[in-house]
Length: 76
Image 1: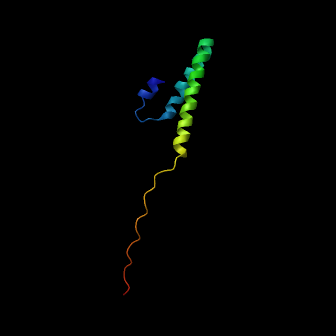
Image 2 (image 1 turned 60 degrees about the vertical axis):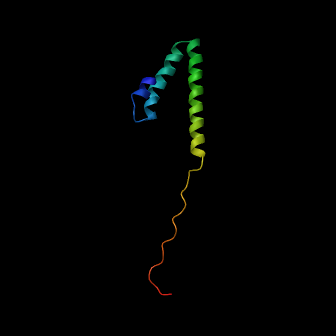
Image 3 (image 1 turned 90 degrees about the vertical axis):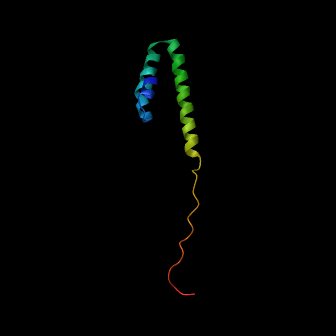
């Protein structure tokens, strides 16, 4: 997983799917000790998803609207 993060300077998180899947498969194959690690990995993934949802649910900063353009033509 670390190699996938370090090897992808673009920050493409999709590249993490396969290494995380491999890690979880290795945990299942390792028996009870691996099950504990797998539970920790799933907990971290839940925390990441919760943080992303929190960020996405925040309002975006808006810029004030530009003042209306001055009218042209006409007489006063």
